[in-house]
Amino acid sequence: MGEQPTDGMSEPRAILTDREREIIKGIDVSDDYRYQTISRIRRRFDRLEEDLEVLDENHDSLGEELRDVICEDD
Image 1 (tube, rainbow, N blue to C red):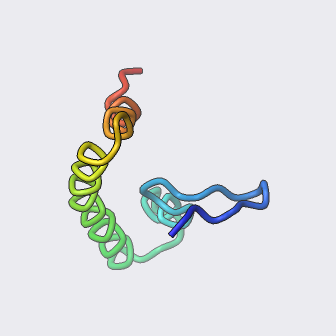
Image 2: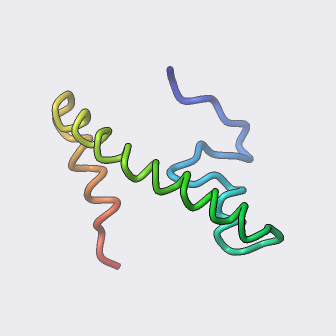
Image 3: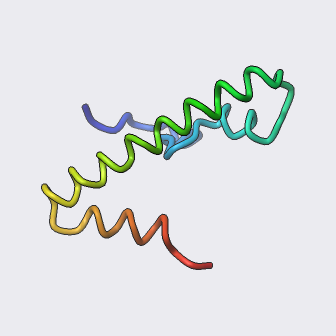
């Protein structure tokens, strides 16, 4: 499963979709729907750990690149 080509207007999501970003910001959603979205995002965090293990075990640098992006101090 490869990355979908983009039309220049949209980019593939990282952890959040554009809509999830809006929901987290509280834009026009019920509290229940916001809670459901937050739960779905937390499940992705759990899967991220497994993804990182796969990257570490199967590629020379991708795991470290991901850590650099996520842990970068601004």
